[in-house]
Amino acid sequence: MAICKSHGQDSSYFIGWQEYEKNPYHPIRNPSGIIQMGLAENQLSFDLLESWLTRNQDVIQFRENGGSMFRDLALFQDYHGLQAFKNVLVAFMAEIRKKKVKFDPKNLVLTAGSTSANETLIFCLAEPGEALLIPTPYYPGFDRDLKWRTGAEIVPIHCYSSNNFRITESALEEAYEQAQKLNLTVKGVFITNPSNPLGTTMSHDELNILITFAMAKNIHIVSDEIYAGTVFDSPKFISIMEALIDRKLEKSKMWNQVHIVSSLSKDLGLPGFRIGMIYSNNETLIAAATKMSSFGLISSQTQYLLSKILGDRKFIKRYVKENKKQLKHRREMLASGLANSGIECLESNAGLFCFVDMKDLLKSNTFEAEMELWKKIISDVGLNVSPGSSCHCSEPGWFRICFANMSKETLDIAMQRINDFVKSNGNLRRNLQLPSVAAAAGSRRRRTIANWVVKLSSGDGRTDR
Ligand SMILES: Cc1ncc(COP(=O)(O)O)c(C=O)c1O
Image (cartoon, rainbow, N blue to C red; front, side, top):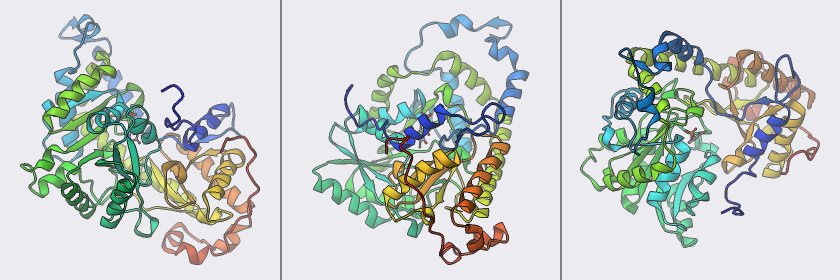
């Protein structure tokens, strides 16, 4: 385990974080530092949470009904978690799914973040050497979370920009056949909905294709719905459970073969609190995962605090609404800032990032050229963004850019840096002829920036890849 390479720590995704750590941007102390745009953190609604804490000092002091909760919380907890916390969590899950699904706290397992939830699920579903099919591009952490300690394998379902990276029947079949060629038993399909890094929600059609496929092959579906509360625009979010209910599959075998992963890391912007969960109708899986959860419990005081915050239903409703408004605004800021430089984002309606098409900035249509551009963006432009290849994207030239982990001012500076970079690399604005953002969005990129092939020098060797 100590020398096993499948952790993925040497991925450009993590190397970018290390580069940022060496020279982090600060508006006063280090204005020429690297701006972190490779971290899917949500810092946009902290003020709401902080003002809730100010109004509810008793909770922070563990005081309830005039007495102290301190000893109760400090003493031994079993693996099941606080019942009050599980009750409000399932209510929150239902709330952000517009009450289309009723969740039972009995079917919930608490874990230290989704990272732990995902690994626990794979431990339950797959033996070492068995496989999960995953649509590309996907969150780079999955190589660590799903494969590293479990010994399971990931077989990509290759998705392409030609249909906005949607899942198709043929892509699913191809991945399944590929697994068979590799002598791997497929145990399930693992989706992220809304998607990281695409920032899109899956359509009814896609979910139906997926369910039909899983039923035909008699395999599981894991749906990582950690971004469910970030859907800020239409089309609406459809949970995999809702799709099952729509097809009246509650009494079918499939009902026990679908599992949801969720967390408060993104929806409430609390990744440091390590609050994750598995939801499943499968009693055997829930029993096993509950036993496993002793390796990654959420501390009692965290459960206590969050049971109070989530229990304030009025506040949570307001928080979710306001947070979505902020995310939408930020997404627009990023998309229009990039459009001013002639760069387009994949249309998206959720998440804390955009998937950005920079194909025209590549020297050639290769992943080597993507790495070269990425190094340049980190070292010369001073932005840490995540290359599509770190997300196993099947096409070179895509980058994930996060927009919710910084102030508006910092985002403005980042956009200015990109603009300067594009201008200084071949007078692109002259070629682009982009009078307005709306015109940029409406125009077809290939026509307007046909000459946009920038000659970049090779990387400066600061990174390994
Ligand atoms: C799709 C996805 N799943 C899981 C995680 C891990 O989240 P957590 O902080 O809850 O462990 C992330 C974090 O970025 C993610 O994007």
